Image: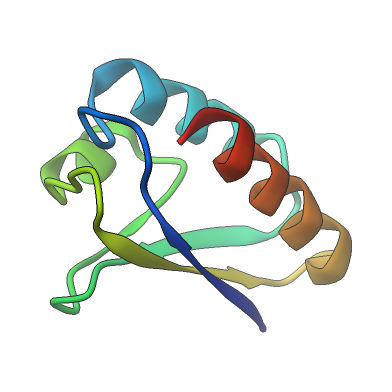
Length: 86
């Protein structure tokens, strides 16, 4: 298991477009990616509606957990995705 935390910078948080991009990026990896909010709610990153249901806003810190596959390489890909898009 590989885990990192990230504070969302996007002015509207994880809404439809970035959630779709995140789901697509997560599906391309061979690890299972889970997003966990500060309140403990979680969703599999490859599931668009579940991501949007978390209600993540700008300034919220989320934990990103990767399990299975090449966790190190996939975590680096996800960290870069978050920096570039969220």
